[in-house]
Length: 615
Image (cartoon, rainbow, N blue to C red; front, side, top):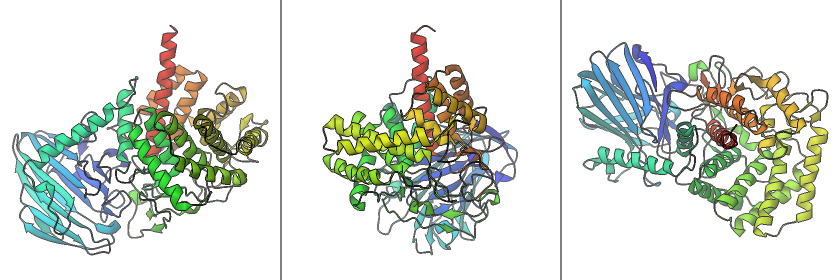
């Protein structure tokens, strides 16, 4: 929970001053000032309708707040839900917005519900609904249907129509929805924003819809999170991370997005501004691993079906893309939105992502690891999926030696990255384990031979005796934080002298207290852009897990709990942390939350074992 003062309606809201709500179709970010500053409709990867995070004047927003200065603001989730409360406190009284999106039929349109309750006193509120359709590229028309309903129609090709319904009078001013009203102690006002379809009867018109929808939404999230098998020391943080990951899963398709936002910068004023509203095979596979670890098998099964469909669609081995739209399309043409100034004027604002065309060999290892875990802890995979897996592993036999763009998607040229070799080894290792556990037919000698070649290659070609460390790519003397996965994927013992020496070198080069940089920009492979960036929060949690696995439990616990302190006021993380601890990059970020879950599970187990030994 966070408290701060409100001045000038706080037109600008930092990334970390937001909570997230969603319905497994899309996500909305709600600021401490009662403003919805980011939302895409109808899907995660659809054009934005609100994007004031990227341009506070042109991007669009939907704000409800008291018409007063100098108030204090607080925001919190109802425990174990994705229902968000935003509270306004002042001398004249207390007001509270409850924001939620009911989870229902995956084929139905999204409904955003905002219930404003005046807890105490008498407060005058203003509502300002400024939709800006199609990434703020399309104009729109606003029609007052009656004094409590407005239809906003996009004039662009997207053709989206949204309906704003209210229990207080509404009017249109310069194409935007507006209201000013006073509530007294115990009085309530409801606001519903939904996609409007011709000749479709809206369920939101039913009597008691808000009360019933709120109760059902709270019940849905609490039933879901109760399925978690984690009962460790950091249950609240782990549950919040699981709920955040669930928000990023598509109920309709089973795919998992990396983050619900686009173009939030990795550095203020920098150009590393990417669109993360897609399904990366890597990120989604890691997410499935985290959810399986917590006992959420249904989500893993849905993703396996999505993977099976992709494998069937692409046919030939090696054609697996590194990222897709949520419905499985592979081409994500990158474009710049020059009319938007960017978050804190960090242009360019990009949609789409040209990295979809890169070669990143590590995705085969991440995918095979998630299939292996699902086959072991979820449900046995189908013969059909195994046939497709075999085709891709056979292709990898002939191609793992290639240079590629690596996990960080560098645009400065291909390299022979250690991480890509490591995950290629994982692909062979897990494929062999699946085949042996299920007695599937497979070319045993060929796969084992390639696995062993990679193993020997890593030790002979990626170990630098001068710095006593494994290195980022062949011929380099730099390290990057992806190397931290070596013991985590069981390639090397966490207590092997070669690994311990590498860990110490990574600490020297990349670690600042509990925070870890991905790489040193002046020493590592060029990403094609230059300049610095923030610390990468997922790799910070990887570092904690490495400390746990090496037996440095007290240090691991200290750094883990310090990392928890970098979460925002409602427990959410972006991709990176800036020089002053500010959140950078897209938000909330699946990578960070799954890293937290993995570190919490491993560290909690190790601490329990220490207690059992009486130490």
